[in-house]
Length: 226
Image 1: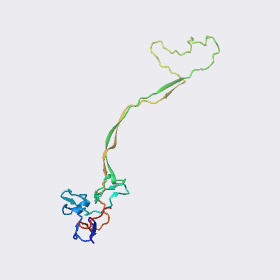
Image 2 (image 1 turned 135 degrees about the vertical axis):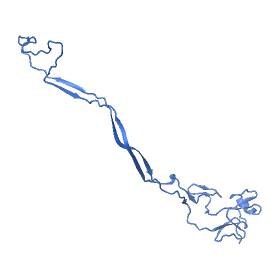
Image 3 (image 1 turned 135 degrees about the horizontal axis):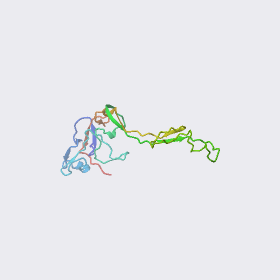
């Protein structure tokens, strides 16, 4: 039984029988294979004038053309996929790396700024609260008597210190603090070292596979289009 022109078969040997060619993407003459060219044109390569290409199935798995369930549209004759991929940072899951910090220490001058205070001093003088027994001064009860009275001012014009008893002073608020500079031992720098990981080796996308020989019928029964 003659094969249908353009049909592709798998065989376990490394050559193509009569009326078949191996699917290796090679270009063949248009005039020599006019019937096959009328079916596939230059869909798989070639200039469509002198030559046209055969499908290249070396190291490739065929898939059905059209729109996949994922929504990707695969055109007839298009090539997709890669044998290996090198992952980038965007492909990696969130993860942690070990890190070490080597501190550098030394002396550092620190200036504490001055603070303006707001002290308030209150003085309390205790005065007598006795009620006078007479509305008019008498010989013994008046400010003019000189007997036994301490004179506040002396005969000279120099001032004297007077001791006041029964007084108290209260200080409230915060005192002023001058600026102060101190030298301390502290961390002045250092280096962070992040432990690297991974070698950047490509990741294989290959499914478990068996290498066989794809061949295409270049002569045979011309298919009837419905």
